[in-house]
Image 1 (cartoon, protein in one colour):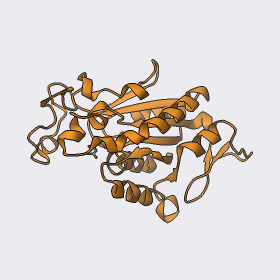
Image 2: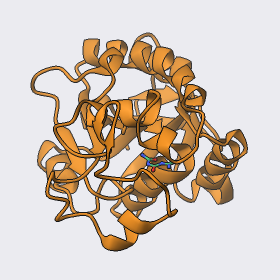
Image 3: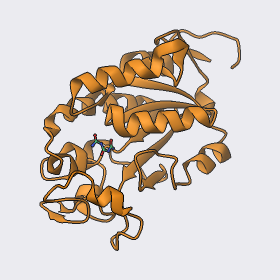
Length: 229
Ligand code: TIU
């Protein structure tokens, strides 16, 4: 067991039972011309997460941690896209429409894929999710249970949308989540701050908040203790 220094108190990491969950680090959210851009956002705000997430990913791979990636998106025939989601925002260009990186948030299109800096290795599960939460209409829970995973180190975008939704879903399913502040971001910096504040409030009501350095320390030479979770 290792200690990840976190708020509101230390997170006791049991690496064999932990997975790094990287949420929706897709070109559609982090590069110009994708879904984030179509919603009117400045996608450059999310790109500061890439370097720390890459450092943690390298450390997690070296430590033999389970790594799981998610992607938000839909089938090419859009049969899994709720009309309510398609219509939301009344944007001129929306999900399924053609953009510079292919059809927006459609599986198999260049924009839907994970950014090259964090690309999955063969064997790392990639969860294709139609919703904001990583558990909704996916086999993530089954995969985690079958692997014996009980703890999640969470990175990704955006803090208040897919990260928060997924952490809440995970928490209700009994997982302990630690969310890394510098590995998450929002198009709205104040929502990032409040999204993290809501997770760790009330004695970690949804989970813990830490950063990539503390997580890497715990995975490598970090403080250790003998108790078991
Ligand atoms: N992955 C994710 O957060 N999906 C979004 O649509 N986020 C926004 O902030 N729009």
